Amino acid sequence: MNDIMKQFHDLGIIPVVKIDRASDAVPLAKALCDGGLPIAEVTFRTDAAGEAIAAMCKSYPDMLVGAGTVLTTAQVDAAVQAGARFIVSPGLNPEVVSYCKSIGVPIVPGVNNPSQIEQALSLGLDVVKFFPAEASGGLAMIKAMSAPYGSLKFMPTGGINASNLNSYLSFNKVLACGGSWMVKSDMINAGDFEGITKLTREAVSGMLGFGVKHIGINSADEAEAKKTANLFATVFGFDIHEIPISYFCGSGVEVMKYNGEGRLGHIAVATKDMDRAIAYLKRNGIELDESSIMLDEAGKIKLIYLKQDFGGFAVHLARW
Image (tube, rainbow, N blue to C red):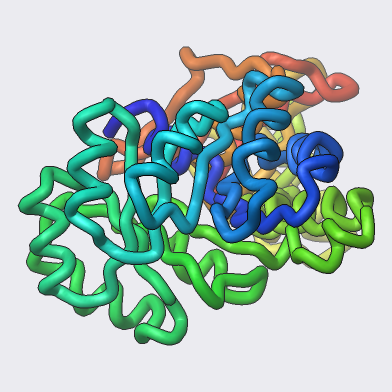
């Protein structure tokens, strides 16, 4: 997986943007970055696309900006000249795909049937856009088609929204989803960039699903831990479940049998998507303690601590 596709995966959502006025490009880029999605697929459906891409790239050089609805090699040239780092097309045009590959620009062409998938594979592609996603059978269709095609990844676009996003992203052959619900054209044209930031932040929050899973309390020793656990059971009626290192009181309190991580204890913050959550925290300057990583039986990260202290508590990520 090349670096661009890795960023697609880590970001999870690719905002698909139609810009009518190039003057809206920079405030839109700011709105997306402030909302937690430093990426945009600017569609070549208006005359402002090239200028908008150039303005975004100049003002936000760390933002991943690409061109969508690219139909010709001439549009590829215009997009790349403007600074686009990736190309997305609604269908699979072998000429456009081959041209992008020849100049080293990642392209994600649209497909919605096995014949087009096989054509994409014959052109050396390992990521395709599934378009229009919902109208073409949605996640069920992707699952039905993907089985014979090994490591091929999909980027569903078309009908994706806040209510079905996580269903798509939960399937391991979906790399990321393209969507426009947080960057609607009428909001851009009205200059409602605060609204776009809000919707973008909500989209990221919904994708990651952060929430407190449990709070861990440190103890001097096992006797103190048992006393504390029994207190929770007596006062609140919590069931106690003992494991080698702690007592779980209900599902929300863990009483450690020793003086564990953090001065006072730890807080487990759960997420719907561990890999994307880790990438999100790193993008936002949060340091993680790589030495604390715990893996599950499949070799995937199930726990990692942040280096930062939160009011005397250590914090680790966990899965819901």
